[in-house]
Length: 353
Image (cartoon, rainbow, N blue to C red):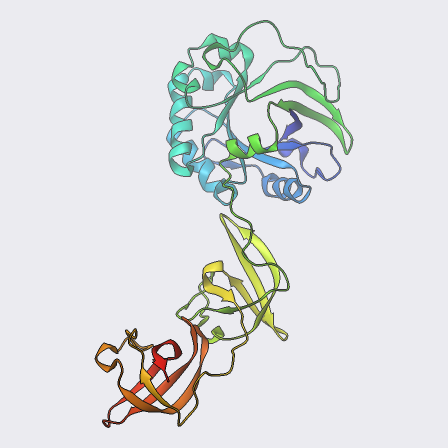
């Protein structure tokens, strides 16, 4: 299985990637420590909204490798985990900085993102240097052109018989800088990626997350004790509300649930904030019932020790519905004992007739 795609920069400013047939798009993000492609964000939005696999690359220049890695990461930090990261290693002055420079950049990006970037270079450079220190940890994207004739995607693009040095195999191959694809009148660099979409995601460091716990139309409520939603908004007042889930969206490695009560929004809820809403049953005990404290009772709802009151006899003085289901009880009871003592927050499971 292979994917066909292209790599672009500000030379393709304004490209509408919904119109361009590509499984993936690699987008220039930065160069050196002072240049950010003015088209990077727009091209990223266009690619993602078109359902393409995406990657971002840094064009290496003469200078400090770590500083350039930091500059790249700082400018694409919101995209980490959503696509491949890559070092473009190709101009003569940069090549003179040697393999150690490239490795320093790759190592720094990995240290800061926990994603292993790949490295792009011409096939001649692959075999001109000893890349063994890099090849053990990072994948290769190499370039070699048969000619500069305009071409569409090729099923079996030409490359010479030279091997790929210490890398042995490649992640991807750029075989033309004169690509012609529908939706763009200018030239495009055409690439083939050796893998499927799941392979791409692995190189991107994407984390698979379980399916959402809830679905649209479910009713939930905020759990007792929850104080903040995913954006830090105070949700203590949402406890006990019957919230309808109206939207579910992925945010990093978790899901966010947007809900409503009537027309009022109850948004940015984490699965940990909420539980399935249930209709409270009628209370098991009523005011005036004679009861005793269960021999298994441990604590009131507020933590007061009930063990000294086990088997003590009393009457229900009041019944209060708690906002959410607390353990197995929807209600708390005030108990007046025959010895004149009281307990205020006894739960249903701690009482028996």
